[in-house]
Amino acid sequence: MKKTVGILILLMMSVCVLRAQTDTLTIDAQAYDPALDTLEVVPDMLDQPADIASRISLFAKGNGAPIDTLDVGDARFQIVLMDDNTWKIIKNISVLEGDDLFTKNWNTRLVNPFRDPLDSIPYRVTIPLIDSVSRFVCPHQGKVFSRFGLRHGRRHQGCDVPYPTGTPVYCAFDGRVRLAERHKGYGNLVIIRHENGLETFYGHLSRIDVTPGQWIHAGDQIGLGGSTGRSSGPHLHFETRYNGFAFDPEWIVDFENGKLRRNAFVLKRSYLSAYSKYVPESIDEEEEIYMTDEQIRAEEERIAKERAAMKYHTIKSGDTLSGLAVKYGTTVSKICNLNPGLKPTTILSLGRKIRVK
Ligand SMILES: [Zn+2]
Image (cartoon, rainbow, N blue to C red; front, side, top):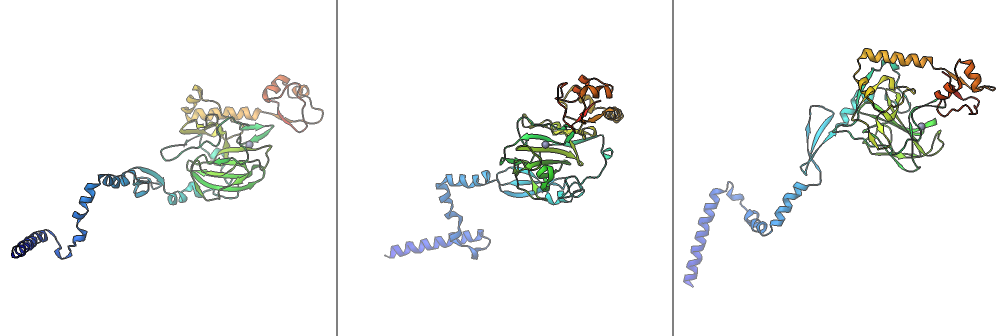
């Protein structure tokens, strides 16, 4: 018994010595709480290495949740760091909101609030379409129903693409909804202004899913396809405009392949007209891009002269193609060549406008 007590005393003394040594290593000995001693956790962790791995991977894989933001040189953008070791660039909406682009000529009721004349627009403007922060989603992949340009003497300012009623319509580029309401011939119309200065129009919708002022991304649903307004069947009327002037969307969108034709687009002022249709890229066009302003001006003058020389005639009772040929000093076949679909045998309907020169 005495022996046992002696051993116990010895043990207690040695523990005290050990504690005393430990205490010297602890900054706040009084606060020491054995229950919180990491030693108690360590054996557990060593027993379960899988657990350690999963704790680390919890951070490595992450949920893609943002953990920090970094400023970049341009106030419109910020880099966001994610908990899965990835990063992405985001747009600083509060800065974009104050940009001239989204304040000038901003009107939620007028289809075209722009008032600048055509000749105030530069001969050429380079428009970035997609880059590391901007995507493109094709509004429709497939054939174009009805192209941009003159149609029965009327200007058709966009491309008509087949679109069954009820099919979701997606926004082509990031931007802000400027107008979203019913508008005469357009029916239910959504107009979106984009950061690259373009506006896109989506007409004849059966339902509108956005409101003016809303910021949206390429690919966001803006409504459903339909046949509202002046429309003979379900289709989407898609327009691309710059400063209120429409240009052929096919300059930038290859509808058949559902892709953009280029990442940046050189918009020429001459495209901003119902007479200017998209022409497939050729060596000539490539050369034209590198033309001097002087050469472009001369080319535009030539086109303007050609346009001024164009003559139209509205069909009245008693008009015949041969009669018109005599009247305008031309031939029936020349008139037919100027009007796609017109044949010498075509019965001319009253009020139809045909080009005679
Ligand atoms: Zn149309």
